[in-house]
Length: 474
Image 1 (tube, rainbow, N blue to C red):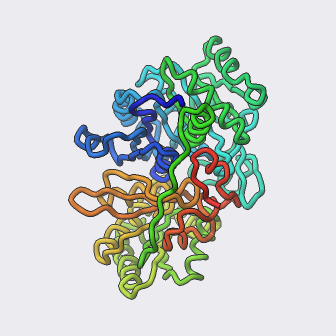
Image 2: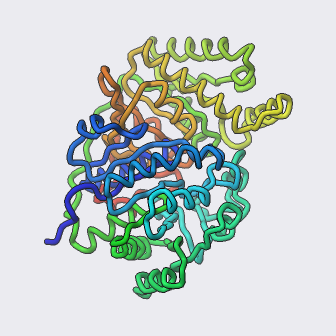
Image 3: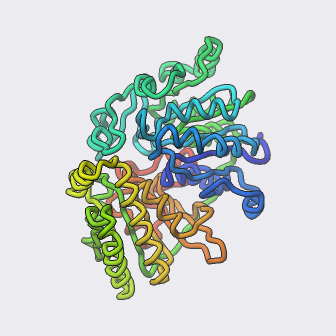
């Protein structure tokens, strides 16, 4: 049997914390051990994790301005490029969260091509395992089994920071970059002409290429075309669809043996959840938790964004969550329940009064939730945590003092239970969950250590993910 090259296969930067664990999950449970660092790793940090086939760095670029990206991304991407992996991946969300002013994917594309000097950029966005699909350049996502073009999606079309007004990703990107964007469409992939279509576009001078993905066949075909074109260096701006596609191709080509059995863990005595997500899926998870014995602690966003009342509100939330855990209960500290929650309007009103961007106030809320999580964890000794929301996850991991994560157990696709490494302290178990990830009982899955069950919140049982990684989740 042919095998993959020895050494590192993928080096990647995640543009938010929850999405960063997605690539690690797919590679690890496919039998390719991967470690995710919370900052650019020093040589000593790399030496603590020998033999890894994937190395990632979790970032915050999704919530940042192009000016911030131009200042901070080049050294990170250059350091990852120097590791010598065939594929260098700037990992984005499969809902393409971005705008010309916040989390600009077009800006990241330009920076990556300039900073790394890699020859071209592969863009794979669709992830069937997460019910995300790209057809003829247009992005779709399903909610409760119903598919929506992303500019009509009930959450993404109304996202408070990066609302999706255009589903054609070429047009969406045109507002963010001068780089021309090509397309390898589903017809070419279905007909086995993906590599030829890619070569023709590159010969025409195009350096950035979107790949349609609508099912397992196009996913594997896209992964194969990209892997075969790796010789002169691939820079990818892509979701975890790229990772699923590569693994699917490696397995179909006989380069990768069947995945080992998925690891399992037991139940946790107590679970602490913090959530800064305004997704309807997370709202259902909070509702499920409260109906199943979790103590709810709502964080008052008006108080948190006001410097005169912030400390008192954080202390109140800490005390309430700590009391619940001390009594042997599970606790959920949250700032919103769904896209219609009153807190969203309250933040907009506070931003208008103070003349600040809404995003800046959301970052303040995320940091407050991170402080609550770290303080309660220290006081209570709780050893298993859940964080919902990308910005909140970044704040939480920083406050906890984590420097690296490894995937410990699969839960819902895109939201594994991780082992968080801390300097001088024992590792802690933590699940970092994006807003759209997980079934209604996700918090129960984490609590009870049910690693092989549940859905992704879109009514999907993980079948495509299982076929790509070898891990069954149904």
